[in-house]
Length: 118
Ligand SMILES: [Zn+2]
Image 1 (cartoon, rainbow, N blue to C red):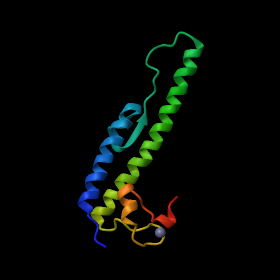
Image 2 (image 1 turned 90 degrees about the horizontal axis):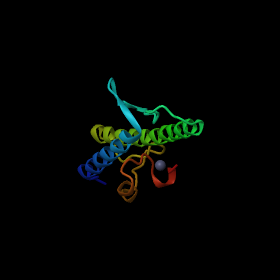
Image 3 (image 1 turned 45 degrees about the horizontal axis):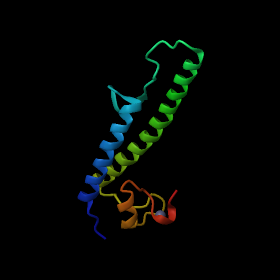
Image 4 (image 1 turned 45 degrees about the vertical axis):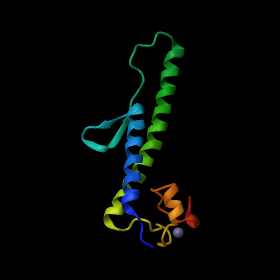
């Protein structure tokens, strides 16, 4: 099976741009390490009430959770892009078999075949 890697590269780059855009709303990129994102606190104003402090901390925790999830997604996309470059794209990381093309179509950063889906 020959994969249309150009097509997948395109899809992955689109997904990457989208994830980075979302990440930028909850985190900022570390200027020294482009792959490292630091969740940004929402505490920019001095809170007046105690409740406000709790509320802001809570939303910061949400930002951290969202940032972690998006960072993991970004890492998967980058792994897939590296695999395309090195020619190992589309192989299951568990059994080494080719990943079903329908699965890659649905999720271009998939690293396992259907049988080894997490
Ligand atoms: Zn497998």
